[in-house]
Amino acid sequence: MALKENAVCFLEPLYEERVIDKLNAALDIIFANKSGERRYADALELYQSGVFNDIVTPKLISLIFSFFPNPVLYHFHSYEITGQQDKPHIAADNFLDGWHRDIDCIYDIKTKGVQHITLFIYLTDVNDGDGAFEICNKNLGFFSRLFKNSNFFRVTGEKGHTFLFNRTAFHRASPNRNSKNRRVLKISFQDKSTVMPPLNVNIKSHEKRFKIHQTMENINKSDIVVRSLFGDKNICNHDVSAKVKEFYYKEALNELVPEHDVLFKCPMNFLQEFRAVAKDIVYLKHLVFSQILRCIKR
Image (cartoon, rainbow, N blue to C red; front, side, top):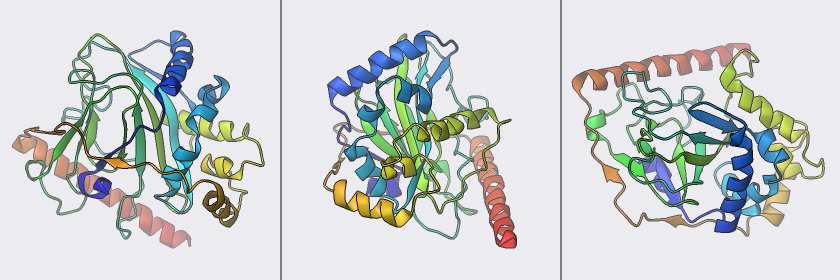
């Protein structure tokens, strides 16, 4: 799969157009009561708006379980970005034009392969200038290659466009320079064996993770697969795997080759190359230190 080589892969649409329209209608109501250049609809709001079962489908469950034997969600929300912006909405002032790795990913440096995955579904048409998602396959390592020796990909597409990306890869949302708002559905997942940062009520970015757990409390106790995905630790992984194999593996999403060229040039100067290397070294030192602490605690 292209996800490992390119840090991004494209899938056939996960949802039909009528479902996208239903999601947007619900989000119109949620976002109407929110302000700011970036507005979120968290997991609990999506659940309460009546679109939860339209999102959490057998196809979605099959997709997630095709990557990890015992997956759990890390993100489950939608967000909307206001138009007419001249810089990225995340990490805009990091001296790399918004390019960043998700450093909340506690990557196991001893384990190969993609460990932290995000599913993106565009809920609006996204063309050049509409805040298109961009990603680079620059590898993570103490002696990783430079940006100039890596590939950059820009993801444009109509509403319903579906793709996966590696959260530990360098990525960014390009500036949404046009007038319309850009809206996406974001679902991140990883295996339960992969360490997560401990939840902290004092960290604002953890609010949406708390909402995932609150949503789990509303899910029927008999639905062990979905409750497990949303973080129920009282469910046996073996029972979940058995149910997934029985009911969900018949559904599958095909990987697609983009109909248009997604590669683009993104020149980085010497200072930006140096900053990226420095950021990677700090990130890797943190990962090594975290791994040592876990070994000591054992």
